[in-house]
Image (tube, rainbow over all chains, first blue to last red; front, top):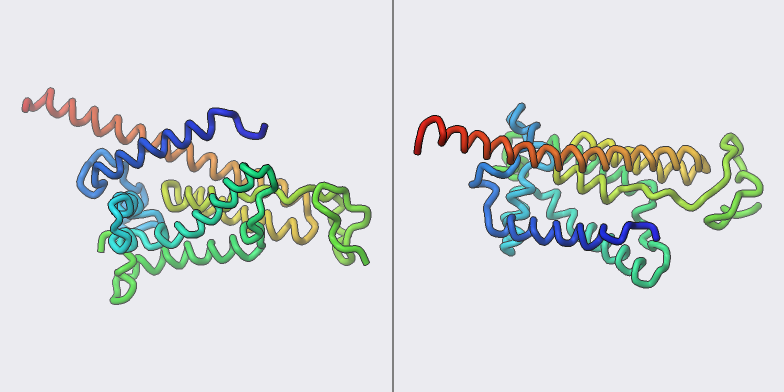
Length: 136
Length: 112
């Protein structure tokens, strides 16, 4: 057995609690949600800025609004979905994890470039790019 | 010429042109790419990016035949993502406690 038995139930319970909290409360309005240290110090957005508000919007089914807060998070969702589909399938069928794209040498490099580009571009205060900012 | 040996078997001969790495082939090490992405988007940016860089390194080193290098990059990737998760979690808890303490303290000092 590779994972301890309480890992999966523990993680799922934690996620369920977080989902309820993020559904019920808008992180943009309540002070109790943590703020990004990078944004607090510099006033600039990091690639993760806006993701709490984006999760709140997603839980209410507002995908466009979520993309407005953090496009990277919304874009990563299909990728995460395929990964967890393969992971679940591997666990159920007891076969090896089979999504080769994760192990491809170019994948991580492309993601690295996308993350850095997103970080830079969302801080450009000009016409097409400021739509990427977290609080546009 | 032989193809790459199957996963889990020791390489008899290093592939042509890759003889500078004399270490046995194991299964492809986990690269923690997904975990690094989650850390990048959800909390600790620098650690998440360090994780992504190491994930890239796991894949390219493994494909170059540097199995020990891939293994150590995998360990590094896990180290950074784990650290990111822990720092994120501790940060969230500390922030919440701070806000509550300031709120309660403010109420106690200035009344309602």
